[in-house]
Length: 273
Image (cartoon, rainbow, N blue to C red; front, side, top):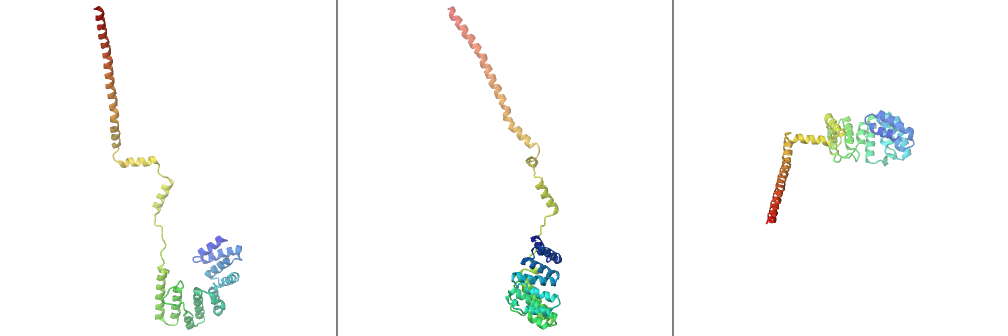
């Protein structure tokens, strides 16, 4: 059920009919829950199914006790070709409980109902409410200003209509909505760069590959060999020193027999005496 509600919310502005079908699927599992009936009513209204929307909004109000969708209920009456019933709903006591945004929405519905009945001056008067303030911008102000401009245009007050249309743009700019909304941030990485990054992630470089790249970047290939030879030169001098020591020991050993022979001669001469 929750997945159907999520899809209904995502698709309501782009594919309202499909969003309505998702909401209906959710209602078959949780039809006694107020949020589910609210979702069915909102998606039905967005898809133009005003009869179903009106029924669901009434059920939502009965379950939750909330009148927040009263403006939409009145607009459903307009959509069904019953502007007089929309006006009756707008004059009910329940309309007094609406917040400022709800009162603005209801005023625009009443203005539209008056225009449906051909009462264009009354349509202008219906929008002249305290929330119609040229010097202040609320979330509902751009739509209210444009609705008032349309009503003024219908009675031939073209200059006043142009003034309120310009003020609607000012409100858009102040609120950062409409043409003045901040653009979405897009990923500008190219496909080739993305593939290279994926390849590096899948096949990380090995230590021996990094060592080979480092040796290639050091310079000519013979330079490291020369350094190794220079390091090996002191080791080559060690055997020479060993051979010199061996010659000295041989010489010393050769002198020892000669000294022994001389000593023997002196002993023999002594014995003769």
